[in-house]
Length: 194
Length: 122
Ligand SMILES: Nc1ncnc2c1ncn2[C@@H]1O[C@H](COP(=O)(O)OP(=O)(O)OP(=O)(O)O)[C@@H](O)[C@H]1O
Ligand SMILES: [Mg+2]
View 1 (cartoon, rainbow over the protein chains, first blue to last red):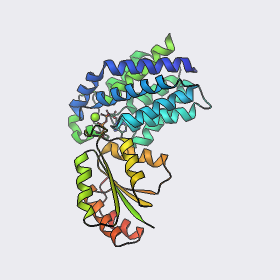
View 2: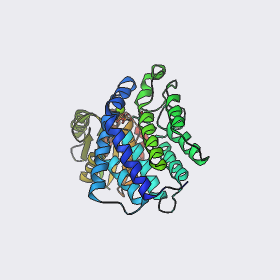
View 3: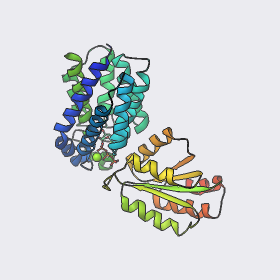
View 4: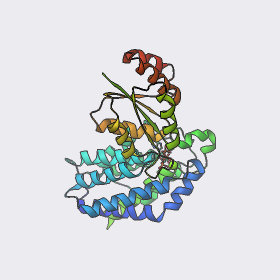
């Protein structure tokens, strides 16, 4: 399945909306196993993306992802800044010659792994990005799948990020970055479906 | 070759404090720092990090950081810039102090790095 500039623009706008609506949910999740700022960080990113897109309408997919990446990198601050920022920057480079959705999300997921020096099962957003990109490659991703990926982080022990300082005590809570990533992919499914 | 030292911390006070501490050991070395978010809250900001590197007068920049995302932001910046940046995964205070002391007496980079290797914690 390929993604058009129009669909991707819709995707990003829906993501922004979800981040703004769920700022306190994300902060609460991050309060349990982190420093309580994930919602604030992502909301700051959402506002920066909105501002950047209002200033200049991207001409193609690559430019859209680059605009998103730069806004996030510059404004988000916390770990999620360089992580989401790298994902969108790598996707922007890939989108110069590629519009296959599964490939793009795969490249984004690899970017997060590289930046975070992390992989699946470490209780991070990768536990949503990685299976999502695989499901897309198999041509079957639903909101239920995304929700399952998110919920799988609950029983994991964190070995990366702030939550890893809690060691065994990080168990029993959803990973905040996985929750924001679930919003991202819910938004994607909504944008592609309509 | 001129050394410069760059301090990155999640806390504006830690960044400024480490600067003050190591400045005494290295009065002739350019030391710049980035601490906290744009609003001086706890966190990190790529814009501040960028400015700290650009403002530094050195041409071999020795960089020290504290937690999680300062490292990721630093690595992200290193991919974006042409400046000569050396990143050290060492204890922030002890590492920066060691480097400042040795840079002040113009030790070669290899021997600074040898001393820093003992302080590696991440
Ligand atoms: N090394 C990593 N690899 C992949 N994802 C990570 C890593 N570290 C953190 N994360 C993700 O980032 C999320 C936390 O983002 P948040 O915006 O709260 O940053 P933070 O951890 O507070 O950053 P900081 O280190 O500046 O305090 C986690 O829930 C996790 O999903
Ligand atoms: Mg946090």
